[in-house]
Image 1 (cartoon, rainbow, N blue to C red):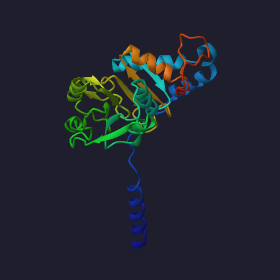
Image 2 (image 1 turned 180 degrees about the vertical axis):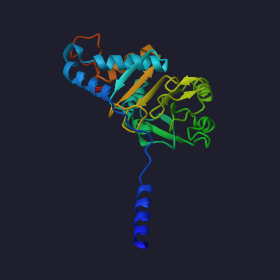
Image 3 (image 1 turned 90 degrees about the vertical axis):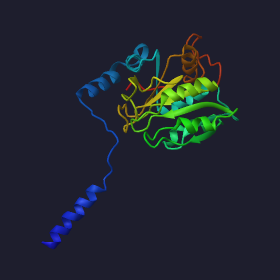
Image 4 (image 1 turned 60 degrees about the vertical axis):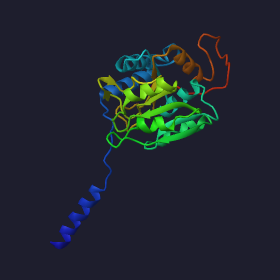
Length: 249
């Protein structure tokens, strides 16, 4: 009896050590049908039909004018900084409690991350500490919506306007969250989402950038496609840029 009881306790302890997922996928026949259709039809002149449908629906849901589908949220953040012209010598404020992908794109641009403390109530960036870190080199603030929580965007918007510093919303983990009735993705010059398998909604891998700024949107489109402007003749590269496109699958 003692042996059997020990075995049961050991099994229970092993089960208790299993990690609790933040989120996970729900795959139904609908998703399988869409993937099969994309495999069969999303080529040539129809190559972007699923991307465009996804972008249009996403922009509408978040209340933004433009949406750009991308391979990851990391690439979305990278494009934001590139479109803003962030460079070596610049500083970007980011919370010190987040995943590395929130700050890595700052290094991609040769800029310096400045790490702000977080609010103990939300685990999101502290607007008070953000203002303390601002100096002549500060070019942008990346605010992260963490575990579905959102920071004080009312205060962050005021800081952004007061100092003329771009605000970027990293909403990787917050699709469907709201701040005072406004959807996650509504804040800053642009917001970035993740569709990794651990996120609220998944495409396996993937990301989305949303914005209301037309010039910013057009610049992002050029930067994500090897420096090509869609208004130019085909395969005409005006600069060295990036390859950041989402698969139709």
